[in-house]
Image (cartoon, rainbow, N blue to C red; front, side, top):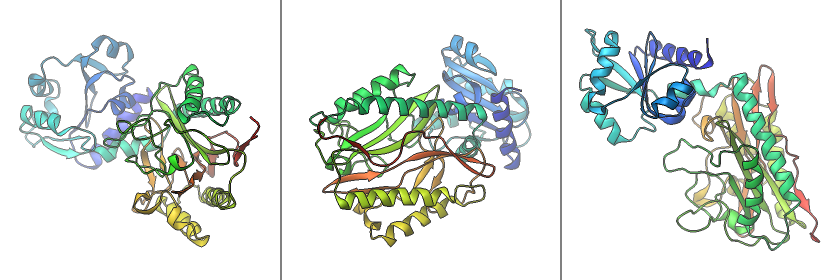
Length: 398
């Protein structure tokens, strides 16, 4: 059985457990996860039987790539009738058909059209079903994330040799991105969150890293303009200021996420203390990274440690712009389940891949911290990030 068929079977089991008759998959990443193709269309998975991928374009590419049956979508207004003909056990039964789909990412305009062409269907939110299945990574997925981690490490180490005071953030970030692209980075980091965007992460020096923005993270970066108000900008990299290097990389669909703190020269005693606290929180978190640990407990533990050293108000942002999490799952998207935050009662399980990112924000000085990505194993964890830790100091003479 192919890995895609195995994933579809897991989704079918979720449908059975929740007394649903089918799942209409609409989002490109979910479709890719379940079929191996990211062509535009709709994947219908009945509670029992084979799935069919209805493709708008490109049908030819989908037939080449997909591991399941592919059919041309044709006219959307006839899609309801097509499903009735192909899945009479779902749509022509005596019981009202109950179909799940991804309410978290499906535009309401398209949802309204689906309701109009399938007026007899009762719709349910099945977002969490796919997100829970995707939480647990296969050995093949883990290998791809490791490959991305290796690419990020190589790109950063190469770019460190070119870093010098007087460069702009975007100039140095371009050195990193150039290396990543040559190693297979697709040029973007996919996110599921509404109106959230990410390219490759960011380089942000000094106060520009601490400038608040819409991005749902502890540091956003100033960006190049209000039209792109996050990430690296035209700010000059000076000596003796923290340079936050928050990098991702997407190779063959899978991402890594890591952060390092760099300085040309030396950091102030306050910032060094905050960075050391970040590492202490990371080590304390590592001690809890094992099956059975409740996700929200990791965040609560980190908050307590930050509070003990008087840095709680700077932890994961500052003021009203603090974010309320310690880390997040990663895979094909940067914001996967589970989230290390209050309210997330999931227990850590073998196969989960999570990024842990304790950071401290100082509006007048910048952001310091560290982020590593981990695989939860049967008896603990494996760190997938391979870049050296500690504050990376570059000689002032460079």
